[in-house]
Image 1 (cartoon, helix red, strand yellow):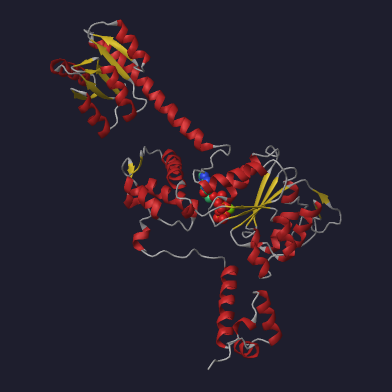
Image 2 (image 1 turned 120 degrees about the horizontal axis):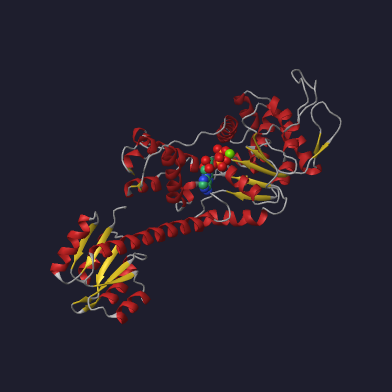
Length: 460
Ligand SMILES: Nc1ncnc2c1ncn2[C@@H]1O[C@H](COP(=O)(O)OP(=O)(O)OP(=O)(O)O)[C@@H](O)[C@H]1O
Ligand SMILES: [Mg+2]
């Protein structure tokens, strides 16, 4: 028997004492009160698994009281005690939502039997409510949490586009769930039984990326000792996710463009084209439009992949998702680490809501994993949430990829230089140690115009 928390309401002090003692001896946690006011007080102060209410409470009626108490704790089962065996009242009680009734005098064992059954029902109801809640949260996309308006809109778009084969471009900061969304699109499409192949363009050295994607014939290059199919061919009839698309080298971009346009490609060292049927999804945490401007990304490819843009908002812009995500991660890790953790303390939740999560959902997941691993109690307390933040009380700008950081530096450098020289290219190029023509190319790459830096003639 799981212990239950019972609220007993009877105006007869003696009976109240006797029943309380009996129920306590059976292991229940009993709160005994004498009227409706006290009952409401008790219910407002804490949760109960069950209430036992006497039908005749002096001036009050037990059934009406039951109805008054319901909003305070919806779903709590109620047993009505009828003193006079009045069958009408008993039937009335059931009709108005009591779990059952008992006629006084009753056998304590009978009471305990009814209580046990009612508690069991209550537990089931709670469990069902919990599961229903999960179903509502779950939506069509399995495990994706989308409580916030912005994420709901994302899922709406995603559900509309899953069915066709258009190329999708998912943009979002690192850890916002780009891969999760890409998989969801695949699973919601007719291609779901075919492969989903993902490749991270930033993680593979340029020399290898090409043969990874397109495959090669034996002898195509040193070390190519046998034919390799390549990932595009492996994803045939399925979905191909090109993650960190912004890092795809220019030389490979043009070959990839052909895959998108013609649905065929040549493996390295081969003159026979391979035809593929693919749904292409690209993901990037860099702004492709800016990359196009700076010459790091082909413009024609950009228009080809950016058919349907999906932008994932950073976690700090969808705070409503944090509690549920944290809860899901908590369950996942406490199950994995075999710990019985009931939840977060309010202070811990507040910490979670206040942090700005530069690493987004992934950072949140890691923070919860850390807290679950470190806790020695049933709750996650605030000290366990991002304790390293206390050691570094300032927040860092998230690190950029080297290429991006270099670009930014170059842009800032050029604009300071032009400001200093008042837009005089010869002087600026001289300071930078560049030929004028090279310097012009640099400016063009960043879309800068020296005329913008010319100082207006002095007015007097
Ligand atoms: N809406 C969500 N609901 C549940 N889990 C999520 C959600 N978004 C992200 N996650 C989880 O967060 C982690 C990071 O997600 P994912 O790898 O898809 O991010 P990403 O945007 O591809 O990151 P990166 O830019 O670093 O590649 C994963 O463990 C994923 O399961
Ligand atoms: Mg990713």
